[in-house]
Length: 441
Image (tube, rainbow, N blue to C red; front, side, top):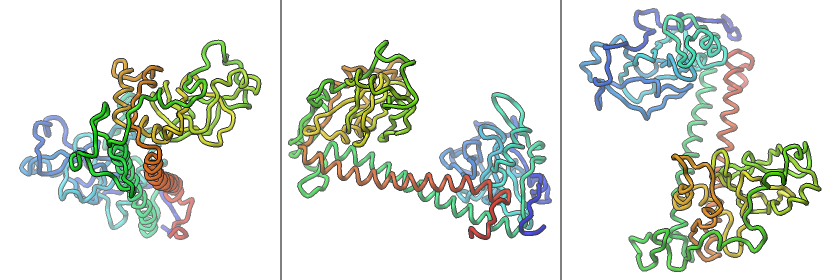
């Protein structure tokens, strides 16, 4: 086989030419859940197997003694774990070195490739490729719980080039996977930092040097008790209705009923905003509905203003973003609360963050839940929402710190999205030979 040639190889041919190189887990009474232990030989479960990714959170074990009766179902780091069922069926990943010995459970399969002919990392990726996934899905059985058995999976094919090219393709995709995992870790860390810093900044604030005040437990003389807990002595606590801008109306939701009929919406004109424009901390400019200039003038009381808070009250209730400075003319809809704050009193940015994340706002909004689900947010709930109110210059300092962190987080998230998109395109191209791997190396 030349370096550029791909051929179809059934997964049964990939396995080592030894008995037990391609096995599924023990069935029925061979392994019961009451035989699981706190430590010992690690189980490979459906929850651990992702698409080219191992999830380590769900950890279960069996005793070494039990393992002796199940050795044929064993797996070691470097083997390939394959899911028989759950979406997507036949997804695969490399077994990682988080334990020395594993055992697959009944709904999982262990494949031990012949490493003289096949690169395990390449084969795992080939199993997850659209080419192999489509064949596996066609051969799977069931409607609500789709599954594929071991005998059938052995007949599913994947596209395989020469051994050298398998290694090169795996190297490129493994490098990309490592970059993705690293960036995911940075994003997760920044999100945790932001959540913790938001709470600290809005309960402790910053001193004249821009540093966090010491906590109440260390410096009780700097704090006072408030309806929101311990806050710096210089701060107030106000309801949102006391922080509204002196405009009419400062809070609005609508238009309702015959004020704007569905047939009055047009294909272009003044944007008519809805819940699909409002995401957590993000305003989406993908406008889908419009009104004429004349209709906009009739409904001008529902016009949005720069830095207004928009809060969804349909769909996923409680998402909040700020209206951008350059939004121009646009109307809000009855599916959102649109709120203009007096910016001489309060930072819209800090208010937006609290609506999305702070415990005190989320607890207050939960009063409008019905049956455990928040179906709307009432006007009186918005108006009576309490916010901590630092001096306005201190608000500016807090906002600057959080804005810088948000910018870093956004940049890392953009990089992560770019890497994932790059991997998605490369996976299909490299695993079918459409893109030569040598140029990428």
